[in-house]
Each structure stands twice: as structure tokens, then as C-alpha cells.
Image: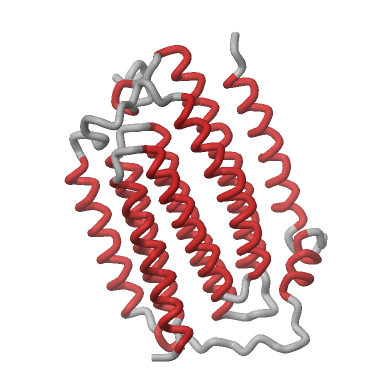
Length: 102
Length: 168
């Protein structure tokens, strides 16, 4: 039997890989990809807890749907910012976007 | 080892390998293609968890919309980030260490948490999780407020994206 902890460890590994992508990547779009991986790991956790918990309580799936909506909103605004930034500053490298850095 | 366990291990292995390529490949278009494979693997994990609706939405929204949108953005901003040269910043060693530490810590906690013993409840033959999910998402006694909030958030984000990317 595939136990709950297998899914949780799988999600933890996916989250850690996403975290590495967010922290280490230079390109702003690659950072957004890392955030997508992290959101997916969260969704796996939510659905796994629904499946291994009380099946009549659908909260895990309901919140996974809401995470989908938030991920779509995040990526739409994020990519719009990247495009706008590219037009104004001609760069998408996160470490060159330091105008507001103290 | 049962068949389901082998299928889970294959799905998890392919997903993790693809996501490793997403964060390490220098070529961003290739990274986006690996991202599609990783998202597909997550959809397969949803199927293994009997969440068929979420698996379909995963393919539709993530692969159909988000990944394609990312490829568009990569193509539009291609010239500035050439495939040559390092794609990681100076702190990538610390980032890798932090990721490994987080994974080790989470695994340690999960192994000691008793999640191993959680039993898998049998899915009743007449149970319909999709119908239940649909009803609870619009039921005033359940999740209608988070659902409507998510809709408003999505609308606001779409308008915001148009305004931000508008050519002045």
C-alpha cells in the first residue's frame, strides 16, 4: 500500500526543488517556474490529506481548486510585470532589478 | 511491492527528475518543457489519489494555460538572457544547502509523525467526490465565500495584468 508519508515526502522534495529554483535562478521567469513547483507540492499535500483522511470532508480538494486560481492569478501578474520590465529596462535578470534596493 | 507502489514510484521519480531539470537547465525553453512534464507528473499523482477532477484541471490550467503563457514570455524576452553564461546567482550554493536542509528536516519530521500508519479509507462505490466537490464549492454552508473570493482575485489579477503590460 502506498502510505500517506510517501506522498508527503514526494511533496516535500518537490517543494525543496522549487525553493532552490526560486533562490538560485537569475531569470525572473525561471523564478516564477520555481514558485509553480512549490504551489504544486502544496496541492499534492492537500489532496493526499483529503484521500487519507475523512473522505466526506472535501476541504482538501476545495482548497486545491482555490490554489489553482491563485496560481493562475500569480503567474498572469508576474509575467505581465516581467514583460513590462523588459520594455522599460531591457532586462529580466532578477539581480539587475535593484532600483529600490537600499 | 504492489503494482500501485511501483506506479507511484515511477510517477514520483519522473516528476522529481523533471523538476530538477526545470531548476538547473540553462536553456529556459527547455526548462519550460521540463516544467510541462513535471506538471503532468503531478496530474498523474492526483489520479493515483482518486482526484480525477483536479487531474483534469491540472492539465487544463497548468499545462494548457500557465506553461504556454510562460513559453510566450520566454520567447518575448529571449534576446537579453542568452543560453550561454551562468543562469544562477552567486548564492546558489546557499540556496541548494537550504533546499537540502528543508527536505531533510521535513522528511525527518514526517517519518516520526506516524503518517506511515494512516490507513487508506476505501472509496465507496456510490460515492461521487466530483459531485460533492461541485456542490460544496457553491454551498453557502461550505466554501462559497472562498470560491467567490478566488473568482474576484482572478478577475482583479487579469485586469491588473492587462494594465501592467499595457504599452504606453
